[in-house]
Length: 203
Image 1 (tube, rainbow, N blue to C red):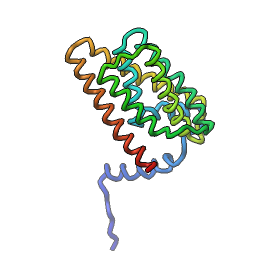
Image 2: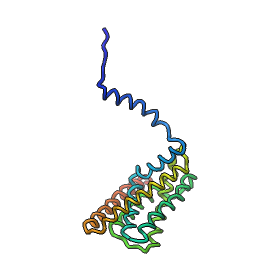
Image 3: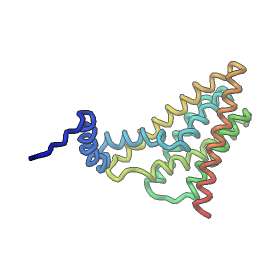
Image 4: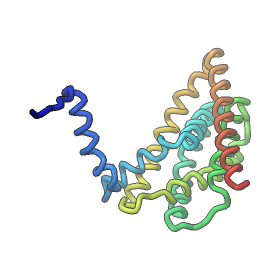
């Protein structure tokens, strides 16, 4: 006498799908398409990167012209230089700590509506961009096309800046200004969390 075990169809489908997915996930994305996809996803999958890049756009919007456009242009351009340094494995001092510090300082700048001279604000953004770019470049997948990967993470960064600028337009209304200041404080707090993790790793 044989005993047969029948699983519900949805459960069977899920198990088969999982079994088919695992080998695919084990392989790195290759070529130009893989590099572009990896680059586009990298900035938005790291919370510390994401919040700092959005904060750049918000701060630029708070400072007004020309900072509203120059800061979000400066960051990706300088970040690309940092990306090359990362790909070449040129060492930078404590990059993860500096990325966390960037989130703290940019969050505080947004929360406090910090009015730095335009050149000083651009310099702050450029310094942090080097470290963000270095982290992206250092994590380039072995099989990915480096140029396509770079285009991907620079493009994704620009889109995050645009999101920040869009959020920054809420400053036109008093309630929106308070909301943005609270968002800046939240970004700084998250940055402090990552900073504590980064410092703890060196302790």
